[in-house]
Amino acid sequence: MKTKVAIIGAGPAGLLLGHLLRSEGIDCVIVERQSAAHILSRIRAGVLESVTTQLMHRLGLDARMNAEGMIEHGFNLADDDRMIRIDIEALTGRYVTVYGQTELTRDLMDAALDRGLPIVYEAGEVALHDVDGERPWISYVVDGQSQRIDADFIAGCDGFHGPSRKAVGDHPARTFEREYPFGWLGILADVAPCHPELIYANGPRGFALASMRSPTRSRYYIQVPQAARIEDWSEDRLWDELAARFDSISDRGVARGPALEMSIAPLRSFVFEKMRRGRLFLAGDAAHIVPPTGAKGLNLAASDVAYLAEALIAWFAKGDAAPLAGYEARALARIWKAERFSWYLTKLMHRFPEDGAFEHRMQRAEIDYVATSRAMQTAIAENYVGLPL
Ligand code: FAD
Ligand code: DHB
Image 1 (tube, rainbow, N blue to C red):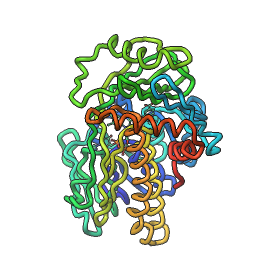
Image 2: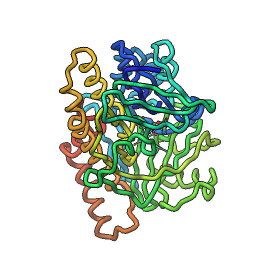
Image 3: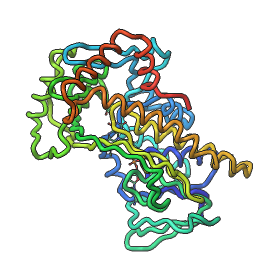
């Protein structure tokens, strides 16, 4: 098979890129390791910046998001029992949309066939070849049959563990990483949210987040030690913990119900500054990871592919190579700012096992400063709502 852009990975980055290219008539194929059902069973991010919702609007794929997504005009930072509301609309004139990654992915997957965007699911042994030449290609195996796609470009949108970053090679001097000594234990349940807006809480029992997917579906997370195992957490134990964190500060208190999903995600900051090798370009989690505090992961994947689509479109429409040459620098400028914000909010809101009383006092002083300074609140709000493209 021949195409213009072979895209590896059908997460938000690969799907958005595929649709953006197809909307300009550029042929592309997505090759994905998992089944469609598996992708739609992954519960991940929930907060969309306007950069992301505007891409869905531009693609004409925003009908369900507009109908079911929840506009959030503000969110809360809690320090023990003190709640600080960050009024993002008053501070920035903008807002964020609560709409799950799973739903966004579903909308993009459902529209793919109609828009001439083939997705090969359950492709094994995906490998990249000749990325330094003019005709790179990928190979993979489906139903025991070896397949090959020749392309003008390869887009590596295959997440943190995919083969694309490895195909760029080792670049230790351009690799930056920080692991955090804790993870997030999440639960999704069909119960009303405890509060009308999100709460990021720092308390003596550690960090906790009260989020939602709809007026009847809640998403909660708590900080757990890095070594925590999901088997050690019954639903009751988690609900007790959430009640201890949120009952005293939320409007309604925590309502309990059967878990639709429960999982633990590690927290990591990671940037691979080499986002291009020859005709291979990386986008999304393939090149960078943020800790989830601040909800930047999916939104960064969206801004990467907005830049990459623009550059590929300029190449195919006008033979202009300059935007492709500038992709890495342009993307990294935004990535580092989102890395900084996610790191900052992670440091501000979690209990670090290595921290002593002094560090905790510093956290409190910072939160106190946020509570009393419009300038600090504005800085947080403009990062939360998303920096401009
Ligand atoms: P992905 O969504 O990872 O998509 C990559 C795709 O490539 C996947 O479908 C994968 O199956 C496919 N792939 C991988 N290897 C291969 C291969 N060899 N061949 C072919 N295809 C391959 N962000 C937040 O903002 N808030 C959150 O609460 C949050 N929670 C998260 C929880 C978890 C467990 C994880 C892993 C991430 C979470 N994130 C969260 C981050 C956010 O989901 C990601 O930033 C976002 O999914 C990035 O999109 P992507 O398309 O770059 O990568
Ligand atoms: C959600 C996840 C986040 O990482 C975050 O910062 C806010 C909300 C969520 O899944 O709803």
